[in-house]
Amino acid sequence: MFFQQITACVFRVGDVFIKIPLLDSSGKSHQEAKGLVSLRELRWPIVRFWNIGSILISPYQGQPLGTILLTQPEVGQQILSEILEWYQNFVVNSWQEYPLEQLERNPWKLAQSVISRLTDQEEKYPLIREVKRHLKEPETVLGIYDHGDFHVGNILIQKQSWKVIDPQYGLHIAFNGYLSLLYAWLFLYGSPEDGITPWILNQILQSVPKELIPDLKLMMIPTIMRVLNPTLIQDKFQLQHKRTWLIYQAQTIYEF
Image (cartoon, rainbow, N blue to C red; front, side, top):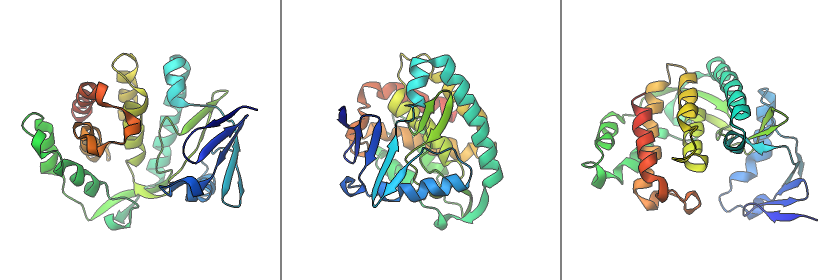
């Protein structure tokens, strides 16, 4: 029988995926079943799964959208456009104003932490200084309860229908899903040679509600500029070979 270890805590046996949270040192997978149930209550299309004790079991349910976009671009583009329209409606109909401290993650603190470790690059990359000037925490923000890590690697496609996996469900900043969609494409799938990145970035940015655009663009800069400091990037991303391309994409997004 076919057996493959996908990550430290995920294994594939035939057409079945088994996640064992106790093997996940990050602790993120412990809440996955609860997050999937919460998303189902919000009418998100989620993967079928069984939660046996602390073990999550799910059958094979398709390929990541990121893979489809690279291997079947016409199919992937159509599906991405449909998903972005759905997600825009979800965000606009779900957001409410919350105190910043109620969010699962404070994106301003995360951005400030990154920028503070890139001060030696300010002369070469004036965009860092520009972002630094505008990183002022608001008291209240638009927030939504949603997936938390919504991107083309966590969207599975099978027979042109889509379902999500691996949620980090909770109260997040309303632009969080768009931030995840942009950075995951650039970090995990995109490359200078793919020929589809400009279309994907434009489609995502065009779908963002106008109220969220300024802060989203601001947060994308430290998210991408992390590549300038190897200590800020996990080894799994292996981004150094496309660092110049990524910085160009950061500038493109900021000028959108």
